[in-house]
Length: 393
Image 1: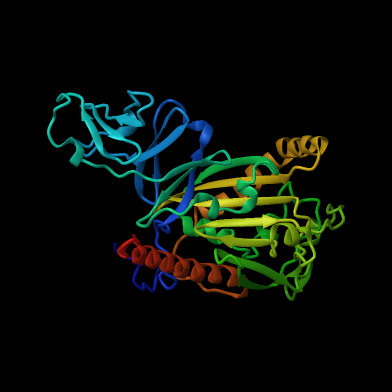
Image 2: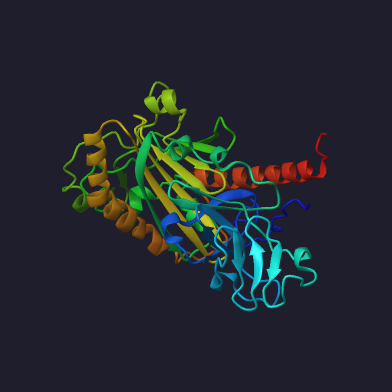
């Protein structure tokens, strides 16, 4: 089994130095679609540049390579012709494949005694359903348990309730993930969004630092010494005075770091207000430990990515749950998940990739690129080594 290779140095490629591949990091789980969108018909998705068909058979979900190895027909145009068998039948000549193993179990147009059926295999992908999403593992090593790869708040459904949204961005996944790395764009890009318009200005001119997480699956960010207003000689004050008169609300604690006595640390072990998780997620929380947001970037191909977002609230009482649901439906769903995100989307989809000139606000981005590439290499190497080591009797 080959260890994943990364691009060679290219002076015009800002990612060449870190080694983040354009098609994404293999050997990890990714959310690829909302579970409710997978009905009786198979669905085609593209993940890390690979065409995949996902289908249901009863309560089970399966994933196979989209192309039929016979004559290249799309298996997503087929159907689960024999419910309960966990198989998918090609629409062209009836070749039928096991969703569990990918092996061809029948060639319907050739009879049950057709030669060579069992020797024909298409790729079967590990696939799971969790927290309202279909998750797919694309890699060359054995898939680890999905529950070990996601934050506790996502898998503990009894303790948390919430909502998820998803969008497709017409940009490479690396551009999208960099945008979530606490790069200080928010105090500028989003300062006049509906969500922040009446809030005090977010601190800017901060010094950023990144630290490895205790579980070894990402890095956490700390921003210090931020300022709400600065005078620039020859220009004036930022933010401009015509943008400050309507900021009527008092600070609500936004931007403060999580202290070691906060519930988020004591109860959930979350020491950073914002962190980047492998293979391309961002985890944001409040010091109270009662709310967390998870943003997951899934590479589709070199020019697009899938952005899946969860807003999760800790269950405390029925009336509070009702209030939080109303808050998300009537405010967060459009003020943040739509309009706020659109401000990023308009910029990211027009980014011109090329040589970059980094500054101190890019500390989080640089730390993420290095950590992600290194972690991915180590996982690929570890998985390859395990595959070559005979199992103990």
